Amino acid sequence: MLGRHSYQSYDTCRSNADTCAGPSPNYSSGWGRVNLTESIYTVMASCYAEGVPLEDDDSHEFSIEIKDEGASLKATLVWTDRPGSMLQNDLDLTIRAGGQTHVGNTGLNRTNNLEQIVWQKIPQGTAKVRISARSLTRGPQAYAVAWKVFL
Image (tube, rainbow, N blue to C red; front, top):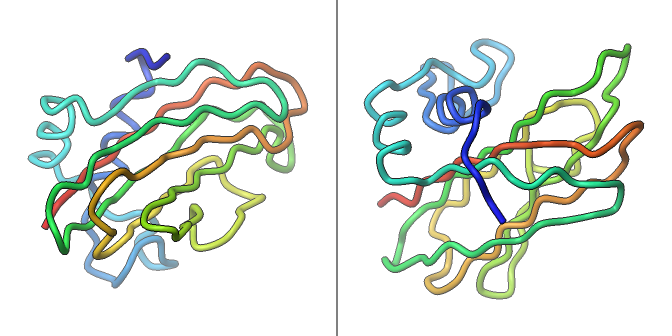
């Protein structure tokens, strides 16, 4: 079950960021600048959600329909991590479509509380988005996810 709450603005803005320094993320501009027009579109189109908090080794999956051939999908997962010198609660973002799987931040990330997938020319049909709790020092862990399908 997905609900909408406080994570929406941070996650929505990150999913709709522009950058002049090349593909995001990068060392020059991080995740890029906020594109307010695209952020408002994401909110109005209800392409965001706060997920039910996960316990260790739990996961949540939902579907996004990809209707247009040649479309791209951009999805961003974010959560508030507990204080510590390293990542305390580790979540993973994966998307499966057309027999292929893409993972957040181009690989399983163990250092950031933000993961993003930009899948150019995603196969038409149903894309399965999965958020997994890989390792939690203390749960449950709430999260938010925003996405956009575009040509």
